[in-house]
Length: 510
Ligand SMILES: Cc1cc2nc3c(=O)[nH]c(=O)nc-3n(C[C@H](O)[C@H](O)[C@H](O)COP(=O)(O)OP(=O)(O)OC[C@H]3O[C@@H](n4cnc5c(N)ncnc54)[C@H](O)[C@@H]3O)c2cc1C
Image (cartoon, rainbow, N blue to C red):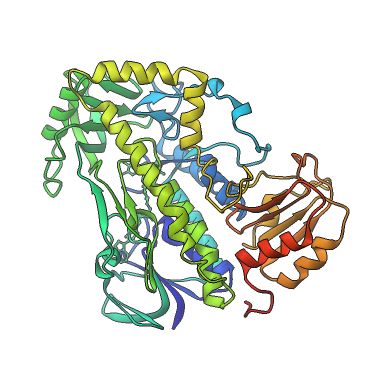
């Protein structure tokens, strides 16, 4: 029996598998598809924007460089339109309803507690690049991946979950459904999935054009919806406000795609061929809880929404890093009471706010007599420094603050990448998935106290180049600040904070 079974070896399932294995859990991934990757996950259709928040998650596990390298290698292979190479790549992470942000307008003084580090910005990648790096990582950590194993039945009792997949039965102490937007685990385990129905059908395709210059590069909002043309050869997207009426089980023909693109773009653009196409909608649904007994959900299995603003994968990576260490502590028997339920408590509101953000964009784009007035208003607001900063705050993945019951503005937020005088960065100290006790004082009190939690937290003391006024901080394995002290560190308060998040020192340990 495995500690944890994961249904779905997409990016979220793989990230979670790595987090759990890093913490000493035995993990098996049951993946429906026989082969990794597909034309839909490769560039250009697999193009995805990662936020700075996700870049931090990769950085803290020592994977950022590899993902960036794999993404650049993919881009080179696919090539770009000769007439488009000088145009800026569309920044999936920096627009609202197709209206771009100007980074120069961000008011950085309104975004305190940031320190320069390797993960300062988001970047464009592909699902294949992300999955390739994560697959190598989890293989090195001993995660077993069973391919050609679609989960078709789930039963659970007090101590065990049994998943049937590919004609076999697999047993685990826990099961996490990371099996995407049409999650079978979500349905079999009886989760509610609630939200709003679609207003549009979206398409992404790789086509050949007779006259591509009729279409502008980047996002173009029109009276009939929105289209996107990227610098990748023949890569287009469009959003057609048909009330979600298009039957997505029917083949996507050249005639249909051309008719939709002509109507939305207001041109007579001619598609000479369609090489690959897929559709999506803006259906926005979320599981009302992310845990039902021994079954949990993460990624698209827990929430779906339109891809506008490129948030789904980022949201899922956030789920994986939030859940991994909590589930591992539960498996090892040292989790404080209620720790696992903070997963829903913390991640559900973040998911709900991303769904709302997506709905607000859809409402802004929805064609109608009042649409231009609303779009002009939002465009004007976004051109103000406050407006740009607000959109950046919402979409960069750096400024969510979990309510951990503290008034301190950094508690509940991602930790700045402190750098010690010897050059060591905090991100380097987090590669093994431990929590970190950061101590910038000259006192030994915290060091002595931290020893009680060896194997769960790592103590790091010394002088840092910029301490931002802090004397000590407790950082969770997901990079979230759990406790912060600006005075001489209070040993009792520190011990209380460590116990709250990492359990009693004498409880079972990995
Ligand atoms: C056009 C488009 C553009 C997007 N752009 C962005 C972007 O720029 N930024 C961003 O953050 N997000 C973006 N997204 C969203 C993003 O792609 C998803 O949120 C992300 O892929 C979700 O990852 P996942 O691992 O949860 O699910 P998936 O990627 O769907 O992976 C699920 C895995 O589970 C497997 N599976 C399915 N059923 C079963 C089963 N029964 N048993 C076992 N395995 C199963 C599947 O084969 C798959 O490998 C975009 C989405 C679309 C459609």
